[in-house]
Figure 1 (tube, rainbow, N blue to C red):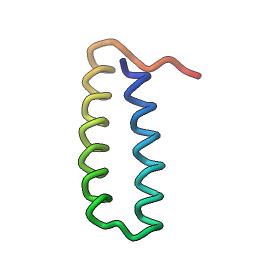
Figure 2 (cartoon, rainbow, N blue to C red; figure 1 turned 120 degrees about the vertical axis):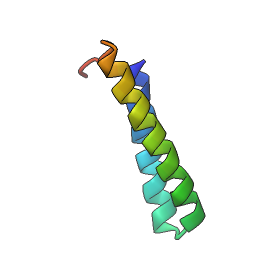
Figure 3 (tube, helix red, strand yellow; figure 1 turned 180 degrees about the vertical axis):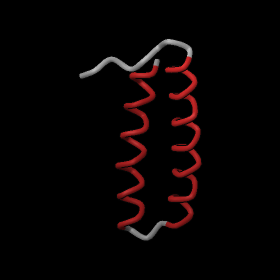
Figure 4 (cartoon, rainbow, N blue to C red; figure 1 turned 180 degrees about the horizontal axis):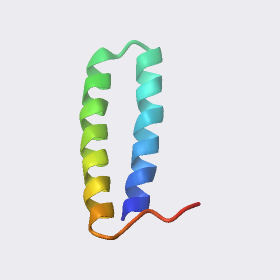
Length: 55
């Protein structure tokens, strides 16, 4: 699960960069919320003993 969450975080970061380059402020705020949630969930998953595998 943590591995998939890391993929989602990477996709959100790329999406945020595109939104920022295009000046879509409202979208950036939404992406930031999603990033915070994904990061928190990744932390919970890793704390539960389900670390993301190294690639």
